[in-house]
Amino acid sequence: APSPWLKEAIVDSSLPLHRCASKRGVAKCLGAMAMAPPGQNMVHVLNKNSKRDQGRKAQLTNIQAGKTVASIVRTTLGPRAMLKMLLDPMGGIVMTNDGNAILREVDVSHPAAKNMIELSRAQDEEVGDGTTSVIILAGEMLSVAEPLLEKKLHPTLIVSGYMRALEDAQAMLKELAYPIDVEDPEAIRDIVRGGIDTKFSSRWGTLISDLAIKATKTVCIIKPDGRKEIDIKRFAKVEKIQGGDLTDCVVLDGVMFNKDITHPRMRREIKNPRVVLLDCPLEYKKGESQTNVEITKESDWEKLLMQEEEEMRKVCDDILKVKPDVVITEKGVSDLAQHFLMKGGCSVIRRIRKTDNNRIARVSGAHICNRTEEMEEKMVGTGCGLFKINKIGEEYFCFMTECKEPKACSILLRGASRDVLNEMERNLQDAFNVARNILLEPRLLPGGGAIEMELAARLKEKSKSIEGSKQYAYRAVADALEVIPRSLAHNCGADVVRTMTDLRARHATPGNQQFGIDGKKGTVADVKALGIYDTFSVKQQTLRTSVEAAAMLLRIDDIISGISKKKQADKQSAVMGGDDETFGDSRDG
Picture 1 (cartoon, helix red, strand yellow):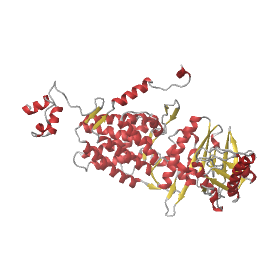
Picture 2 (tube, helix red, strand yellow):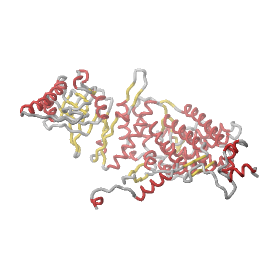
Picture 3 (cartoon, one colour):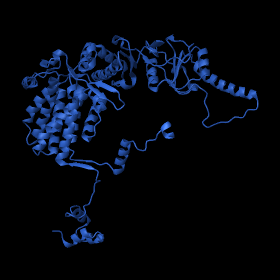
Picture 4 (cartoon, helix red, strand yellow):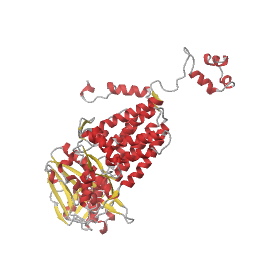
């Protein structure tokens, strides 16, 4: 029973604090107040609106969230994958089986589910492939931890078992990988095809893989220290134009952009043009602040106009002294400047994007000039073989092709509808990444779930030598790895139990690491003979990301989601449509 001074402290809130302090300390007093008997005031530390999950409940809700996200994309794995149709908030439709594209459009509220979706984005940015696998694997890693938590195994023990299994699996991956000759175009084409055969574009044969390999090799730069730099995002631009035939898709040996010349009398086709790139406006500079000029004579007005003309003439003369054929600027071009440059025999293109300007600089060898006074001969680009304006459909496009050493390129995609083109572009991006990974890290692993089964078999064997309860967590990782071949078999309608038993039996015998699932027939097959490969960098990243993410989610034992009253009120008013400003007739009554 509480001592009399404590009862007094609880009942009489006006009691001086030093009275409590003199006994056992303020902290104990506050603790007693928080656990006050019924009928007396409780101390509320957290906001009333906040929701809190603790301990086992928090872990189980995280596991459930992870499994739910994994179930969304599970059917999109493999060549017999299903498509998902998603409606975005703007009312547009996305049809795809790319894991990252699906999860990007899904709106989730649970924090653990958001974390899972983040994995797919990270995987896409890092290696560009395996976005579906990483989510399925992470979901399964969480799923196999559930029985361990029910056995009252501590999450820290489970996590340490997971981490040990990850280290051993990484070492086994390096041992199982074998090198490839990047100079052999046929071998690289097979690998890229293996990477995108599961996608929508597989029906067009080698078209997408050939485009991807050519584009990747074009933008590949070998540094003086032997390192390769492949920046696909900045220097390989995909241009999608509706109409035409799929066979019209091509990687240009140069760049194209959606612009026309500024004056109809300028030349539309120039062979071996001298290219000048500018980052400054070719128009008369207006004052920063408002300027008023009072003129008393008509001749003064003419002088003002003449001065503007002289200024423009000077700017154009600075450009014309290097004898260019094509002038491209990111800013505007005035009528006067067009007139002077046309007289000098130049074709002018204005208001081009910064990114396009950088690509033109790479293919033509020109330097981007910021001020016309600084123009020199060495800034002129002579690496481009042909400048031509073509009309495709209703739009005019400028082509700068036949470049001597293009270090940037444009990929022209033609197709029947916008949805087909969008899906082709997504597949092409995956193919780019597979090609880039091979050129940067020329090592391969057997695909079709073979490598996961081999790792599972080896980890199960090794788990027998581990003492203590860590062994359970170590074995759980091995069980979780089997989800990839199981999903592949399930997606193509095979008898999952029989297929998996057959596969397990084969991998139990040493030297059978190349046996996996033939994703089209659903049978156990030698995946090396079928040419189904995975790149080493993708598999390594998938394994590392999924295990580390699962370990992180398992270590969470408290979820507090609080929303203040003010935010809640704001949300409600937004839903009810309150305080909306009205325009036009409705405001005027």
